[in-house]
Amino acid sequence: MLRHEFQPGRLVAGFFLAVAGLVYAGDAGGLWETPWFAVIPMVVGGLCLAGAVGVVGRTVRRRRGRTGRTDPAAPADRADPAQAPLDASR
Image 1: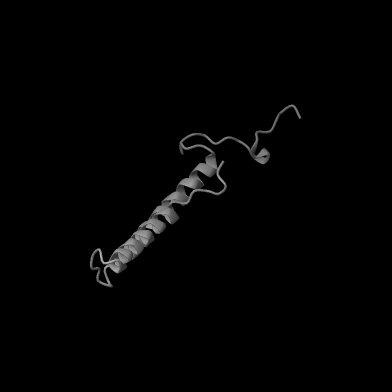
Image 2: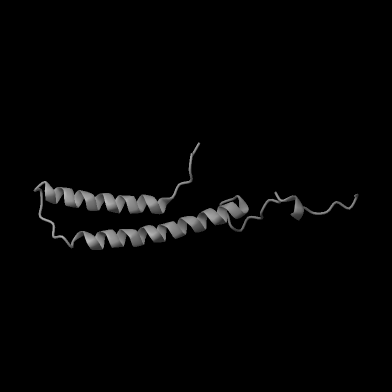
C-alpha cells in the first residue's frame, strides 16, 4: 500500500540534480575537469523536463480520478447519490 501518491516530476528533478552533483563530485575528486557553467544547462533542462512530466502526471491523475478507470471513453460509475436516476416507485 502506498503511503503517498507517486509524483514522477519530482523523481525526474531529483535525478537531474543528483547527476549534477555527481558531475561536480567527479570534478572535485580529480576524475575529470568540468567548467563551472557546464551544469547549468543540465539542471535547467532537467527542471523543465520535470515540470512537463509533472503536468502530464497531474493530467493523468485527474482523468483517472474523474472516472475511476484508465479508459477516458468508458462511462463513469454513478457513485454520487445526487446523480443517481430517480426511482419511479417512490
